[in-house]
Image (cartoon, rainbow, N blue to C red):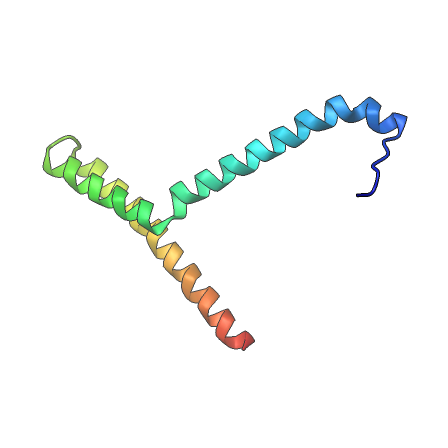
Length: 94
């Protein structure tokens, strides 16, 4: 295994670099979770089902139901368009 040598400058900035790398890792994880929450088809379908149940139980009003339904279905439509676009690009590349 090759020996790793750190310069004095590397050692000086090591206490600053490690937290920055850790913060970057955390930010990437948060971004992945947000993407999944906003654009995962399974998550969006569950949200529609939950929304329907809340509406049928009278937990939410008509306007809230309609607006939430529009938002979720718009995200689903966007996701499907992205998938179709990716498939078309894949076919063209073959």
